[in-house]
Image (cartoon, rainbow, N blue to C red; front, side, top):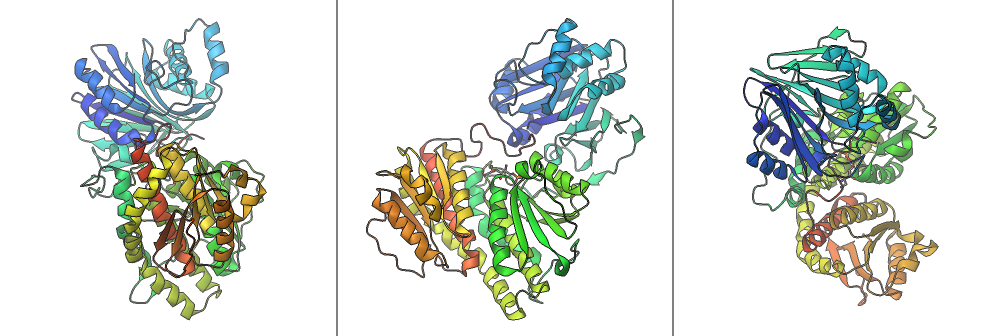
Length: 605
Ligand code: M6R
């Protein structure tokens, strides 16, 4: 998963390319590069590290040119070094690529037999050399089609041609690609976010499409090289939500935004006058539903797991929750009476998008719960329920998680009401409890001081465990995921009842163990599991709520979250876990918004 930008203009493009690459860093940040055409030469500049490094390189050795491409990389083939950074150029072309060429080894061997020499370990260089070979006989557009015929895998490309200096060709198979329109300037980008600082007029390429752009014209072709027209979409206004304000980093800003984003979301979905839920246009009649299948990756998968507990508690429906990368290759038995619900912040996650495509091929109804409404997944789903959280920039998902939980909970309440699984009185009670959530989230954020102290226990820890039962189990998984991705510390999320089946062997003197035990039907059981941990030397942080009085002097810390009806506990118990991961990472001086080896949007499988 990498970021692509291309600009054809009547003025020098380098500084706009750099600005767009900075916006694209959420897709990958291990190296970056830019290529422009000037004076009949391809100027390629690239280096490992952040876009800032590229900016310094260009400051010392400027590149000019009115047509150019740029790239931020998240390494798949080959180390993140200067040679493997994109663009990959030959004497005739320069290429930036997002995705994976699955048959690159075979293609490489054939090209080597033809005498072509490879400089990098990337899969992308085969594209550069195939184009170079075909350009000896064909026009740029034909050379691109000839090259595409040879490639298997999923990719988006941006290509410059030394002998056709005013054009950029873009091609899309699997990985998303958009174009943007302006006066005397046109753009190519991995997504609308990359282009938003320059234009609000965009079109998305469909799978298999190729586009040829110059500064004043864009042409589109389908996979068979037939010309086609594209709808121009007008993007909604950016409301400056991407500014840091007084916060040190985006993650802390996004954690502390949760009372506001949840209130925003509740206002979008709850009709306060009718005390009802504004969800209509179900693609399937909820009364006739057979099963709900929830699919996502990472944090979004944890939202699916929480939803599974809620659906089983509130409705008579069958439920399944699956990880997208597993779902897409399982031998799933599709059923037209099932609703397939996809949860994704970015809406660009390759595995989730592929699982959605599989559902579409099998003619079943799909719904996406999404933050980025212009995304690939949103555009492909039968039904879209936005979470209204605003842009989430930190790689670790925080406000999007609570947003996903909110929307899926509201959807479940509505389904439960329509199916008469809950009566009007209970429905109204649940809505009224939901409305209390933003204030209670605000109170939960006050746990920060205590969390900061507990975080110190992690500095020398070898690892940690997060335990919970019921819907606190996915919250334990989420807490562990946040800690690993931000602080690079080993963390395991486990159902508390499973400890005795093996993981209890990991408990030793001083191991930090976080136990999530609000006063719900699992409470006593989880507390017994906690005692087993304490008896073996575990240093416990108990996260519970005010309605209980667990006294155990061997608990290192007890955090009391505000009391709320038990179904809503996951919203509140996840807050201290986000803060914990954040503070441990701060103490360990890790990069909070861009943890190593990761990217915000995972557009490769
Ligand atoms: O954009 P998505 O919600 O589809 O992303 C899914 C995961 O990649 C994402 O939640 C990831 O696990 C986060 N970095 C976790 O904080």
